[in-house]
View 1 (tube, rainbow, N blue to C red):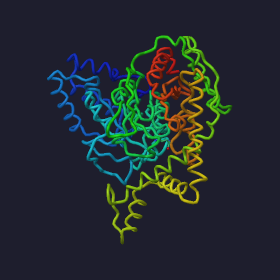
View 2 (tube, protein in one colour):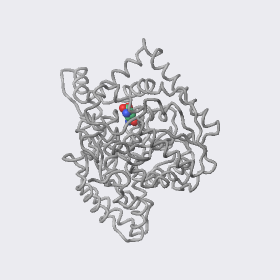
View 3 (cartoon, rainbow, N blue to C red):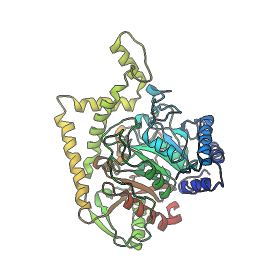
View 4 (tube, protein in one colour):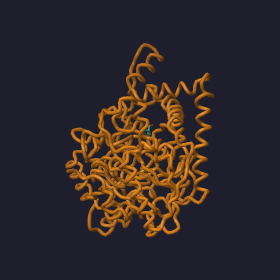
Length: 487
Ligand code: GLN
């Protein structure tokens, strides 16, 4: 059986960096091991199809450069740690395709800030990973380059849109992956694959070099085999960046400080996230996790976030609206694909029709419609108003003495590929995750057990820039659950 969930054949990011710093292992050895694991897990197109690009020569060049740095005494907190990167984050030494024909073979002339920070810390990018085209989707089935498979069962989806990174980390290939979050694309695949996924506060991580989907919601997020791996990755990439004016100059504390007790911590259990029709076994896994929190000293209080049921409709107006505007730049002139036709308009049309897949086209049409003069007030303006109500719900509970909220990450475990043919069904897999993006708050998913043999996630939501508290609670819960997270 392939490794999934909490199995850590990699030994964890901190342990790798420590072994490298001590000279017990070399970056080239780590690369050897990583490629051996990728081979064994069949990460490529003939297997999981998690990787869209991985070039051993390029990866070895990175390891060689790192060896020079190490020889001069320059070891970083992620020295030699192999990472995988979702293919909508710009890298210099490999293509950045966004899982789309329109950017097939496209190479970015610059690198994302998150990538430069990972490299400065000593990390080695070993692969670019598969995703739903332009990060639009919840299953990684909407990639132009074929779907990614769930590491535990190839008939299932790994979740999405960061499904390639999630599958690679769950299969034990690397301890850390980068993904992107617009409405749950890191947390949902993390939950499906049995690993940790984090969406930081809006403005916590630079979006420079992240190909824009919906700019007011987008953040780069991290996937980790454990809470510690995710914490280490996030604190490396977090912090202000002059290249992204929406980043905030808020200090980045140590996210790796585990809480050993939850004494005095008040956890809110929002009733809207535990509806009658919620899968009973998922509800039971959440109850068990909350029992552990109580045993650690936490108080659990029932709370209400009354605007929650409006989140999906609001998200599916705002996200497509922003997407339709952001994706206007792919016109056959400035980037990637060009399909020549008779005249400029015809060229635009042919390029975009051929270059974009059905889900991306659907979102562009929907977004253009809700932004059009006759409908703007009825849809977009209204959605923006409701978005502030959703944000206000969170502000209200967090100012009423609640430290963090605990919810299921998804309403179901991983589903079968091809089973969601109605787009609206697919959209509903995000009911518990889109709210954090709409409100801009941080959220983390960690494995809390299995349901019918498949991993499920529990979600911890915290106030803006309270990532340290969120990680502390997650770390304590992860320890308390121990091997129960696999049952
Ligand atoms: N599944 C959601 C969507 O399709 C969220 C995607 C994301 O977070 N990038 O829009």
